[in-house]
Image 1 (cartoon, rainbow, N blue to C red):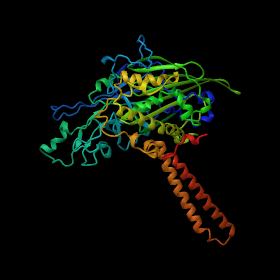
Image 2: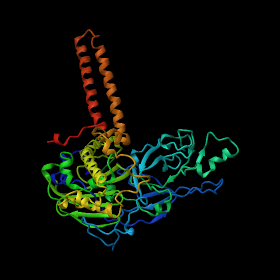
Image 3: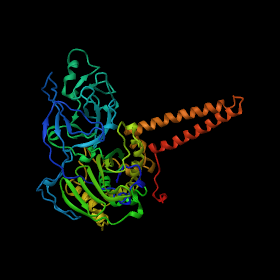
Image 4: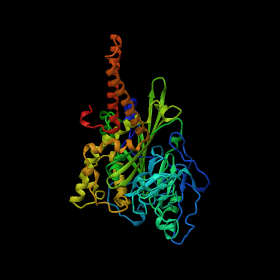
Length: 561
């Protein structure tokens, strides 16, 4: 995806612009769990860095619990230094495209992992939010009393209505909008409005069948994580979440975050973020330039069930790592020289989480950091020189540059797999021609998915019942920024609403000035009112054009010289 998330490529040195994309972290230490009694969640990566992550343990319900239906569990706070999937002494293997024997011991467990589902700053604590994770419909909401983010199955146990269509009631519980059943943070039913005050109906609220299913949740570094298995509380408590590098907490680095839902598959997106060589062409004049394309000699340095890692030599130096199931980290180091300032060592981090929502649908969460060309100031988001929503305009151009290309690629792969009844990952080397080292990480990911990932995520339910979005959606729908991003981004949603209000005010001013321009007897005043009418109308139209950046902007590669 090559999401550099900077305001403009034109400000970068040629080496930097040529260096954008791929996947990587740095080696990290292991995690030791310890219990604590309190926790303060972070709201954003670049404002309040979190030094501990919190796993909220839900109450376990059983059929014989009677009236003692819940016992609050203390939160588990886990010290969280940066992590590494490779331990000292672990055998490393160099992976090329080749048929290798598969063993059950090398299989990756898709459901035994933390998945980031949203940036905390883009979640509305006043409302329940729906989400899909591995085709499992869940609802995210914030408990008012504890400040914890909760994840339930998105269905009321009463008549299976979606809880995401409900609300947070007066007691701070999640209430179903269909019949008013309410549920506390542990999933226990707290109210059935239709039940009689005495007798069996009154006791129905205590039944395990009246409970909502809760999943483990965790807040770390401004991200909300969900563990997709309701029976995995112990494994979740013992498992460290993927962490952003320490540089994200360094005040000398400026950071940008964005999330967008994409209508192509997890494997298509992961292949894309593993491919640095597409940047200069797919993102020409956004984060790359066609005339700067050059050979990229990547080496695969290690691989295993955990993922893979590698790098290149030269300037810029790109170090990449994929940490299964969805974390891709990319570090770009550039040695350059500037007038007056002299020798510079620039560093860029591009860390992306590529979350498999459902077959043919993936959420991309990208966090980037850089230690040069700072455009941030101390203070809240609205005070920044370059607001977050404006930086998202550039980021969405990057998404758009890939969108239709990846849609077409995925459609061809799907048709091949159906026509010839083949597994794309097993036959990838025959379906494609990848003769250069620039494709080393793409092949490494396809090898990992085939060898360890069973060729696709472990979905909840069948994966082939409906046609995939990329096969039926139009170009306009594929490039729909409003549904895919704006509605899910607090910054862009707020800016879009503000521009709409300002546009209406300017239209009102223009109408009033036009209506009153003929009233004054003085010609000079008439000219002023007429001028204000024209100016207001012009500004209103300009705001209308700006709003398109939140909704839809067509992307035609051939039109970009």
